[in-house]
Length: 436
Image 1: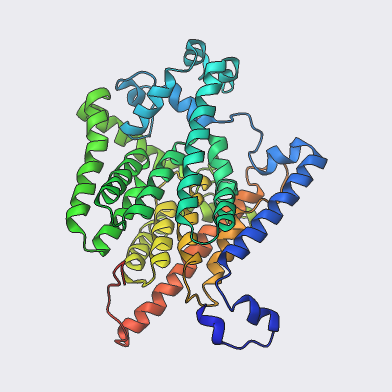
Image 2: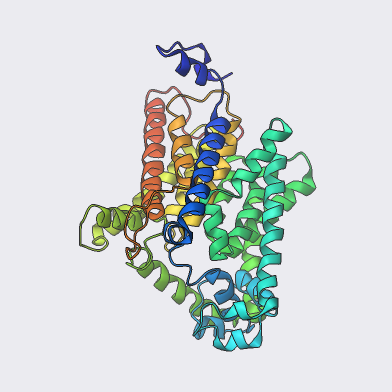
């Protein structure tokens, strides 16, 4: 029973709704209903709205996969010095393997024709095979982790791989899908009674960080569990995931310098760039809101850059340490990982599935906590509502992303303030461990 089960509300309906944990019910009903409406609307209105609302003009479909495979197919430093790739060496190694399946004509002409890969059956099959395999494993991992009846587990697993950010991640062909899989394995198995599974979880964290870097922040959970030896091993595995492919294929120290130069340029320019309004950083969210409110200025000044980058970093790290519940710590880590790194796409909001699963298991949810549920659900839904013209760089889902990241940050901050107040009143210790 929920903490609210003994509380009386004026509305009998509200009393019933909050008598038990309703996280799964809210997420399932709203997401399924929205998807059904979106499907029907698109079926009757044609694909024009679908392309505009969800994936713009579809003129660079699966871009992240094919462009990256094309750039990384040469196993040497040129992917950093000539193609200016920003992915870590491990991600490039993965792309290089799949690049072997691409036609030689695409590897030569692909930079001039974004959809040139469609001319090769092998090129198409490489993406389909990879995506189907990873999606199936993700669904299986989530199905095994969710508690409840088989129908509940299956329903949530299906919804988790059909929500908007997941669909967008697949449409981009972004390698985050693989980093997400490894992160799920780490989160779900790091507390396993089996030493083998716990070690696999640590390796999975290293692989996730080796592919996308920012999942490394989830390693803080090992420190909060006082598992310092495992934390050290995770750091070692993470370093190896970068060093081995870097020195084996990508030029060693020189490759590292070129890679860092590319990353710093991309993170510094794209986070507030007019051509990348779908980023989940707070700076990009601020820019999107500027545009929606009719402000013609672009981006933020130096003080605003500091305020929207380093202050959230400090606050979310404090939230991870201080907030008492597991889902609260995971929420803070997700907000930290999606809002601080420059250039992260809105598909990274798929990470919100992780704290949502833990919220489904919380028997002491407050009414206030359901705000998080509705924010996540709102962002994961499909909306058959055109908001701006097809020529606009800001569409409905980008606006929702901006509102989502600011809202989640705000409510995590509120929770943090409430817990700090308890600490000041000496009602609790400062640090809340993962197992408490």
